[in-house]
Every structure is written in structure tokens, then in C-alpha cells.
Length: 190
Image 1 (tube, rainbow, N blue to C red):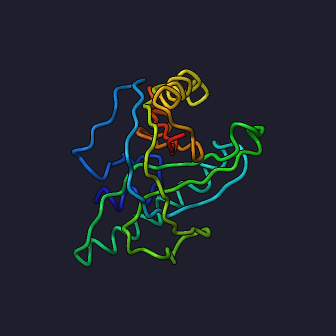
Image 2: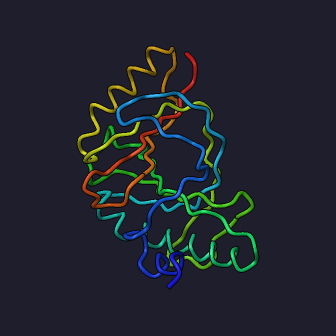
């Protein structure tokens, strides 16, 4: 079976993320940086509740919808890479885990306006970025505290303030022995 069709059948569990630009280098684990990011068109699913439970429902649907689009585009000669899963957590710092709002996303080509054949309602949005503070965290999601402190220290040191929700880009699949997550915060000058 072809890799894309295989991932379509199994959902996100066996997907290996691909970054858009192979030339882009990630910072070393634990090293914070400020980068300028272009806006991204994304397919989005929204959830409320514990992220693990929510992911089990919406993430496979999101991957299947994007892979269906990929297969249609590939057949028409306009293939695109399926990038890493992202999620924004706008209230994670102030709400109990059972009430977290999750905005799960997979990048899609800029001309996509709708994913009509999704099993659940999915939106297509453009996420604005601009300057962003980023750090690669390696380890459990619950242990992100030190990485977040390093990221905030860089933001403060360089004269920025956080200007957007906590965002994560999952560089490894769930259950990886050493999960790696790119933590991202939009920032602006004071």
C-alpha cells in the first residue's frame, strides 16, 4: 500500500510528520530562538476537554481529511507534503485540564477553502504568525515547564511580549519514547 493511502487508513498513529522546507533547521533541544513565520493555511478541528481524549477523536479525522485532499491533488499533478500536526491551547494556563480548549491543525495549500468530505466539521483558516519565540522540548508534555521558562526568559531578554496563544508542533508521533515538541508563541516588541 502507498504511504499516503496507508496513513489515510490508520489515521495519525503511524504518520511521520514532514516539514514544508527541508532547508529549515530546528533549534537544538532546549535552545530558544525568535523567528519570523509567514501565515499558514490550516485545516482546523476544535475540542474542549482533556487533550489525550480529544486527540483520539479529532486528530485521525483531521489526518484522513488532509490525506484525502493530498491524494486528490496528487492525482491531478499538484501534490503537497503533509506537515506536522499543530495545536493551540488558548486557555491551558488558566483552566483545569478537563476544560482545555484545543485548536488542532494541519497545514494545507493556500488555495484550499473547504474540506468537504471530513467526518467531523473542520474549518479552514489562515493562522497569522510574524515574529515567534520557539523552543524544542524533548520529553513528556507535562514536563514542559523548564522549556517554557527558557522561552519566556528569551522573550523578556530581547524586549518582546507574548502576543498569541501557546502553540505546539508535534515533531514525533504520540507514544514515541522521547517525544519532541516545538513550542511556539507569537511575540511582538514592547
